[in-house]
Image (cartoon, rainbow, N blue to C red; front, side, top):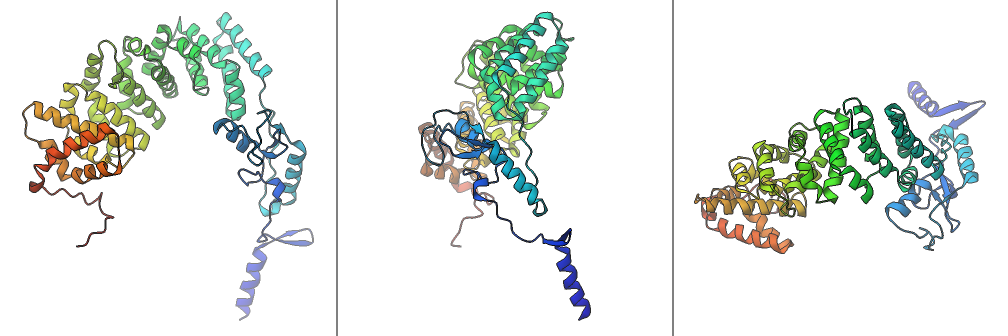
Length: 448
């Protein structure tokens, strides 16, 4: 009995902290004052700012409201804002900091005083110095200034917007072009640093895209893809994706650069990180997709096929994220637009099971790509006069039920037509094979 009392007393004392002559109970719930909470996030404000309507919000939340959600009204009152630049509320911030100090024992750490955001004068000064250093050929000076700009951009979205608004991407792209024109080996570090800075300023304006899309810049980007550091190759493919996705005229110019196709394929066969893989797939998609057209496109697709990209894509599709899955299927559809690609996919044992597995499982886009590829494979098989092995294998892994469901839940007209054609081809063989895939229909309630 005495030991039980001592245990209870020890437990009570463990929940108390001695402060002078007072005992403070840490289990007491402390309520944050309402005027310290952001009306958007309902969390304690770290950097309170006031809009033109007089309502105060946390900077991060209200800037997301204004710039990312593109809403130019006050979140509370709904009144249109006369200016999009919020004013720091220093008085309220100091009150919040004092309150955090008073309640430190309850787990509230003092919020740090936010740094002053970058302004147009500060950014312009850095850019002018970059231009001066560029004119002198001072690579190290340019690197230091680019690093300084990167640090500013990483501090906050507001800084990034200020840097972008002052034409930083154009200046950096011109600097990249200048250092690309001679001694690439000696300027490798500054070229990679500039690319790193440019990735923080995406998306680019037309002037920046035109500059980076020049033959000199494309040649340097491909060179970095081949021999650069891991981070340099990552940044290079991110920039390349932006150039190719927005300017169709650059597709053929890129393919004419020696080693460009091999460099892209290597990023797929020897992945660096998910970001690099996504960017590489998107770049290849723009090169092989049926919606693009330029000279020697068939030769380009054949090159990708001969490098074993189809086999690698199918291996990736077995277990990958949604983004990688959609892009891989898009690239696979483009590669299957010629007989060489279809033959490679037809002879791979993973093709049909993987495509059927992605039906109605990942996204509408992935489903449409999968149906399109299966449809092309069936047509290819008929053109070769071979038995319907694709239809039979698809039946065995549950394609019939999925295609029927696809017709009911809704899809594009083309996808429905292709699904109908596939179902007609499979219906002939339904009596010969077991066409239930237990993994996909395990949650269905059956009467038997």
